Image 1 (cartoon, helix red, strand yellow):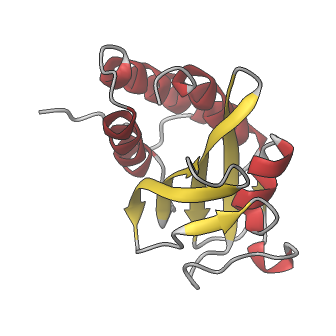
Image 2 (cartoon, rainbow, N blue to C red):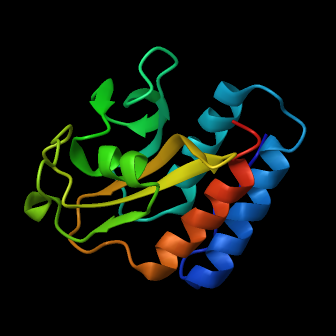
Image 3 (tube, one colour):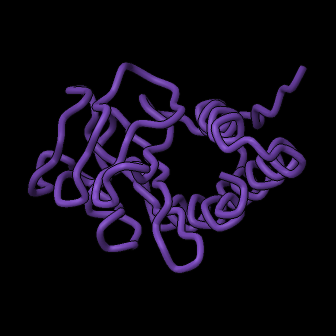
Length: 163
């Protein structure tokens, strides 16, 4: 049994270092991408406060300009997202982290869950190509900041060869 939950009030720098260490321990010796994404989605859910969705969208095997739903925690979600739409699509298309304080102000936002107010989406890049995105949603406006983005970017970099 694994219990990786951080202590309440853990500083963000420590929280993200501990999360990265836990993700490394869970994925280091596992070659199955789906298993690794599933465990990391659950880990994000456990580690992060004020989130209502944590998970992955991966680049479709059949449509190179489309994301398809991967493992996640939260309410049911949109299954397919074109690169040209929404926060996830923008991250996939540009290869850049999307830190959105108010999703309702984001042009083309896709409302999979009407409770979501802010979002952080980080691309997972392997060999110079986006292979997936890590998507975090929150019911609080401006929930995520640059420190969150940096922590999830470090996670994405570590996972690039494991998913």
